[in-house]
Length: 476
Ligand SMILES: [Zn+2]
Image (cartoon, rainbow, N blue to C red; front, side, top):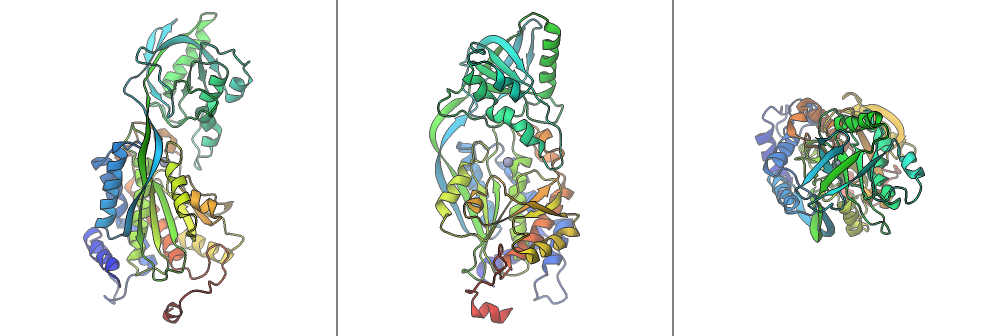
């Protein structure tokens, strides 16, 4: 056992006092025993998410707060015995939200609403802009508007996002935020206001990134909470021929080029010839919340899984955790990591970035090419209530390297029914995390990572790997 793993042994005693040793005090616990213990008593994941939300809080990409998060995370990894901990910095163009975000209807039914800017929104200037609002009930309606028809106006885009367990409705509603403002700008709009891409009825706007192609000059863009959006839509119903006039003040700004970074750490495997297992999450959050669900929980889950697997003894493959920077604002960290490490093959990538509710479905992209391993993994997590699936896993935002290398990918799908109640809102706070469901995540992840990290054969093909060392062959 190397020094790193000795360090784990001490950590395990300190953090999981209820962990039951096996009959033989010298034999490490089995993976099943460790996963079972995680289900009822894992504290690593909670400790991470509680710590980062309490000691760091909101950590907008490219800012000093995100830098503090990296320092905090590296310290946490070190305290828990990870090896090869590093901050891998990269440059990014940094947008910050500014401090003034206000909107009011001036005519015909004067009243204030609540608004938050979208990432990459332009500024209205401190005095704001006042203009007629034009309503579009869908992206298709907006796209059909005549060029120039929105000159001098504010476009309002409606839609109705519904909760879905697999989060698939984000694909339906998301484009309103991702592309609506740039389409409106291309038709002459001076600003865009959208109904939040969210599913709650709180008076919390959901921020999130929007994008403007190089040829489109960014315009101010913000999101209304769902209740305020409904109010605005009633105004349109009641206004008759009267124009609805809005005053909008959003003061984001661009900081220019700043540094972000990816934090990495490893549980070092016994066979350096075998490509590592990569576990990913993202460390940054939007400015308006401490990012408990998105994605402090995910970083807690992946690091907990790695630590739990280490309790079973040194794995065959290295387990590398990637706590990516600057995901929210455009996957800067995922791209930077892939660029920096493209020539270092990974065996398989898995990401946790969908809150902290339970995992209900197992997917891989090697069910056809390595049915034995897919089947063993699916069977192993069935006891935690996870269903097998024939859906081909495509990986999350921070797994660019797995896609770029055409590596194996696993998706452990979480129940996203309430995810978009909280996503990118001020309500993304620690109290929303259900510790029981968080631990189920850790148990499932521990099981999957433990099997993968001790898999001698190639993950994707199931082929024998010729260079597995003789000592390891003899030992197994
Ligand atoms: Zn996220």
